Image 1: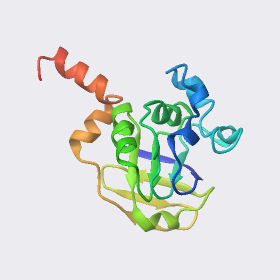
Image 2: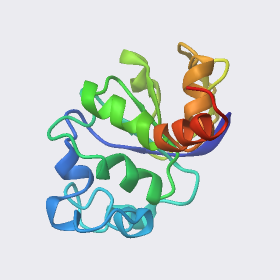
Image 3: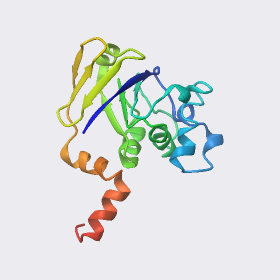
Image 4: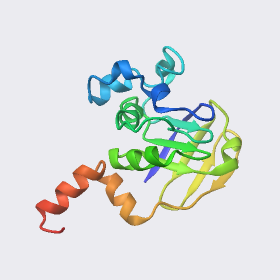
Length: 167
């Protein structure tokens, strides 16, 4: 699992209402939610995002209410990965459940600037900033988590296991 894209950096304590405001929670359609991603932070923020770009957050990314719409909105905007200093625990679980890759790097997040081009090797736990030449090492995702992500999240993963007769 490797990803390469432009970094879109946001600050600390970005809550789920900033990621996708409550007024947009009338759907679970990823494209519609994605079109309004980060609307609670800045009107039109998502217009600068291209498919495959990477969101970079600060401390406590995804704090606030537990809404599965937030990771769906990020995915729907075309960003398959969020790198952050740290994540709110419920967002961390919801992100993986929805198929969004989340990578905590602590203070090393400061080695990534808005607009940098970064590549991420999830299996080996390596983030390379092509703009600056900086390399960030982080714990690789365990194989079972990669399996869940490869299936598109927890529900498709469980559905496939149940249909195959494995509980």
